[in-house]
Image (tube, rainbow, N blue to C red; front, top):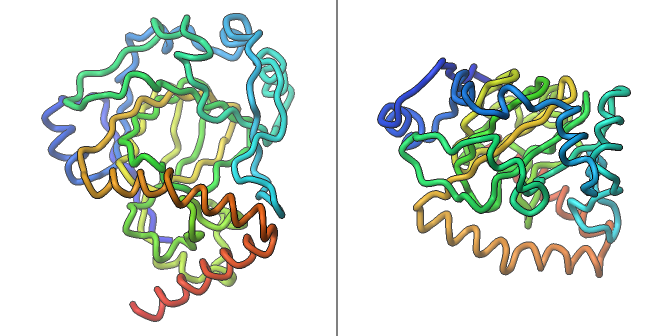
Amino acid sequence: MRLKDVDVVDSIEAKEFLTNYINPLMPLVVRGLSKDWKAHHNWSLDYFAQNVGEVEVPLYNSEPAKGKELSRKPVTRMLMKDYIELLKIGPTDLRIFFFNILQKAPQLVDDFKYPDLGIKFFKKLPVLFFGGAESKVLLHYDIDFANNLHFNFIGEKEVILFPYDQKPFLYHVPYSIVSMESIEFDKPDYNKYPALKYAKGYRVRLKPGEMLYIPSGYWHYIRYITPSVSLTLRSFPDSFNKRMKFLKSILFTMHYDNLMRKFKGQNWIDYKNKKAIEKAEKAIQSR
């Protein structure tokens, strides 16, 4: 894959952010955006165990759904304080995905702010992501096409990003927002997945205190290097086309996919993966 480094700055003004990154859909890392937040100084694994420890959380892993299983189904549930202990013990593939602060831990709202970057935030959905060392997040794009400000507070993670238009080379699975679950994008197998050689994107190692701007529609793959906790603040795009894609996905595509999984099971999954490979092969031929 042809991966470039993401731009990194210590700070940025709203006008420059809009002109150079939001409008052209370019990713960016900002180092000092959260330096004055309580989260920057206080958040730790022990902090979450003490303040949110009694909240039961669904946990996800990297295993692909099989047969008639629904995609993105939690594999287990446990109290936050028990999950934190798992993170401390050693590598685990279990992750907390999309932990809604307003619903589950409103006491954390005062720990962060919405930065003045010239964009309008959707303030009803600040979410946290937790991951154990060596866990990974399948390559996907967000169904709502939001612009994401992803603040990393604890640990380190590697993020690989692709613009939406690189989809032909990414083995996109039909009727979904994901790539084939067998592909590890930080260790690509070009013999098995040759189209990946033509994908153009970005790579960044995100450290504590850094914010990664993930533009609307960008594909992203994440590998947790150490136990990590991040906060994502979302801003929805004004694009009518993207809003229509979002509505189509939630009103039709997701339901159709789940229905086919229910009736055809593993045959449906195998069919979709076959189509993903066929489309990628066509993309290579059309270059």
